[in-house]
Amino acid sequence: MGMATPSMTFEEVRALLKQRFPMIMVDTVVSLEPGTRIRTTKNVTGNEIQFLGHFPEYAVMPGTLIVEAIGQSASILFSKTTGNGTRPGEFLVLGSINDMRFLVPVAPGDRMEIEVQVLKFIEDFALVEAVVTVDSIVVARGRLGFARRSLQALARHDNSLLVPTRDKLEE
Image 1 (cartoon, rainbow, N blue to C red):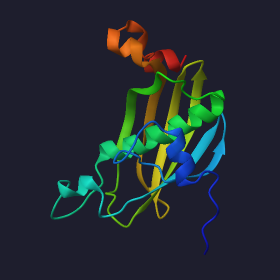
Image 2 (cartoon, one colour; image 1 turned 180 degrees about the vertical axis):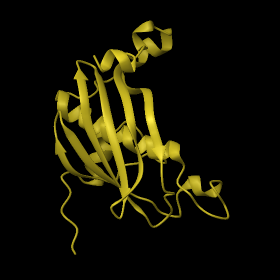
Image 3 (cartoon, rainbow, N blue to C red; image 1 turned 60 degrees about the horizontal axis):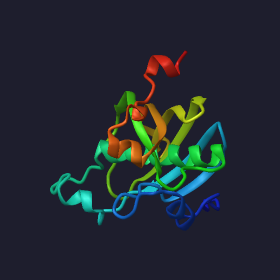
């Protein structure tokens, strides 16, 4: 079966994300419904730097990098939903991780398919639910909260960096 043409290529993804090598964890956007959901892919390869130490005798994709792939997918969705993405001097911060489960190890040669669904969207905040599959098998799932914040606020340790709690977003 042939692969569908992505709605965003790797070059388009790279232009939109602030991350750079070796931290880009999204290869393509398969589908995108602004304000609702996004489906992305990440091809896991054995020559990625994390596999030098995680683990040398049996390579396993670190759960933190699976969460990063979810976060980057949510960032693309956020950018395409708000229409202006993050402006210069801003970034999308991960504020909460809830009910995250890693169910099956992901290894080199796997193609992660990441689906992120918006649960709640309030101005500069979003609560999403994500499911990551490999060959239609759920390998990870959870809920994450994000906020758009300025780099200047981070440098000042400004309280505006605080992300609403799960309870606040779920009201």
